[in-house]
Amino acid sequence: MRFVSTRAHGVIDYVYGLVLIAAPYVLGFSGGGAAQWVSWLVGFTVIGLALLTRFEAGLIRVVPVSAHLAIDVVGGLLLAASPWLFGFVDQVWLPHVIFGLLEAGLALVTETTADEDKLASGTA
Image 1 (tube, rainbow, N blue to C red):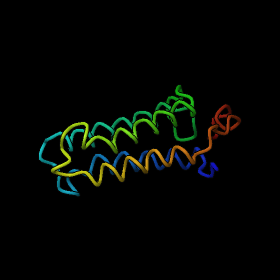
Image 2: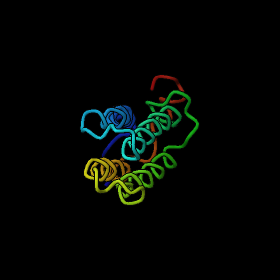
Image 3: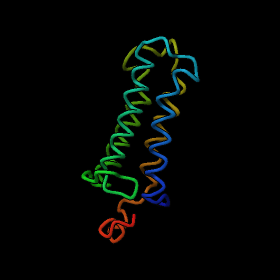
C-alpha cells in the first residue's frame, strides 16, 4: 500500500539528506573513515536526486518518480549493507542499517506518480 505522497517524500528527502550529512558529527563517527564518507555521499546524493526528480519538491524535474524510488530502494539497501561492504562494522553500523532500511522502506510506500497537472501549471 502506497500512502506517502510524492510531495511528502520530497520534503522527507531533503531532511533525510541533511540528517545523513550531520550524522557523523551527531552520532560520533566523524573520524574521516568510510563510515563518515558513506553517510556524506548518500546524504548529498539523496538531496541531489530530490532536486532532479519530477515531483513537487524537485527543482529541475528530469528524473521520473519511478526511477527515483528505484534508486532509493537500491541506495537504502546499499547503505544498510555498507558497514560490511566497506569494513567499518567494528566501529559503527547501527545508524547505517537504520537509515538505509528507512530509505528503502519509504520508497516502497510512496506513490509512484506526482500530480502532473500541478507540475505542468507550475503550482506544485
